[in-house]
Amino acid sequence: MESKLFVRHREEFIKNMKDGSFAVFYSGDAPHKTNDQTYVYEPNRNFYYLTGCERGNFILLLVKGSSFAQAFLFIEEPSDYATKWLGRRLTKEEASNLSGIDLKHVKYVEEFKSFVHTAVLANSRGALLKKPERLYLDLYKYKPFVTPFSLTQLQFLTDVYPEIKVKSANDILDSMRRIKSSEEVAEIEKAIAYGKAGIEAVLKFAKPGMNERELEAYYEYQIKMSGSKGISFDSIVASGKNATILHYIDNFSTIQDGSLVLLDLGAKNGVYSSDISRTFPINGKFSDRQKQIYEIVLRTNKKIIEMIQPGVMVNDLNMAAKKMLTEETKKIGLIKEDHEIDKYYYHGVSHYLGLDTHDVGTYQEPLQPGVVLTVEPGLYIEEEGIGIRIEDNVLVTENGRRNLSESIKKEWKDIENLMK
Image 1 (cartoon, rainbow, N blue to C red):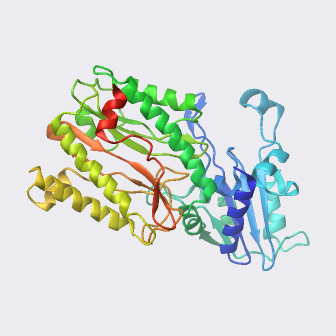
Image 2 (cartoon, rainbow, N blue to C red; image 1 turned 120 degrees about the vertical axis):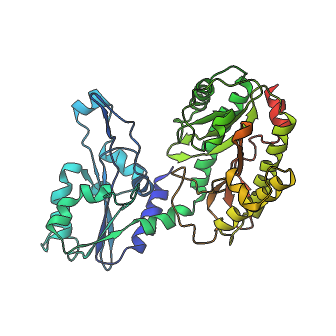
């Protein structure tokens, strides 16, 4: 994407900062994995959102006074050693072009501590502003009572300058990231296109007796051949009873003739994600019972998509999906009392989608144009070995919605025809 998008993101964030404050964001690094290897690096999503850079050990510094604001980017120095062993590093010029940050404000990470002391926190002639009162940090916690990564990284600051108030940058960024720009929607659509190529290839490839891991491998091969960087989350390829486990990722069972296979798959386009679920019969033909349950889930999927428009609450979608699945399963005698639906449907129908598969943003405000969310009703009947989920990715528009994954086949007849 063009640097002007990241400039806009920084300008919007800075507008929400208090005067006399600064913000620091880390790009993150790859955690250690084994004696001689690290995990694959993934950029901190907020850092990427504000800079467009996908490199580890970078730092973004934003400074806001009463009448000015400036951005500084600190990058790893492109040494000969790093280039030979790990690949070419970004130059200052390249980092400036990617982020839209003035080349004069691109420095090396080794300079960060001294710069932030002399230019931001010291009452000296070289200071950019009067000593700030607030520090904005990414305080995301992946589980309760875990110290945010940024506090650990910046402990040297909070220890030496305890008078500075630490403020969460996440409230501002979560609200911003919830609404996607047209450029971001285009990125998500590309990720969906990669996912479509993979899913359709799997449907044509699948045969009874295959192992789930074969379909997993074939999907990942196809999306990468199409241009994707890879999966946006661990692939779910669940056959038979395995499909009643929501986050089944073992993908190691032999697929029996007559079984349904639930695919919950994502593809990356750059840092943006898709998240699509489709369910199909391994032998290419739905049984009457499978078709009956499938149609209930499909009707619910379509109904919830039709409900999406500005002003609707996500909880309204959840309640409507559960009500419809309850009524439909009572009609076919699967349940008798409303509360029994909890045995066969036990998750929400929607979540936000974007830089993360489960993207950030409040669910306590109504939908607005620019929100992208999933619609994924399902039914999971363990005693019958049936698990069905149908998931689409939908954009909220000014006048309603647009199903970004509409071209990925989900009518049972179309699935059967595709598998012939």
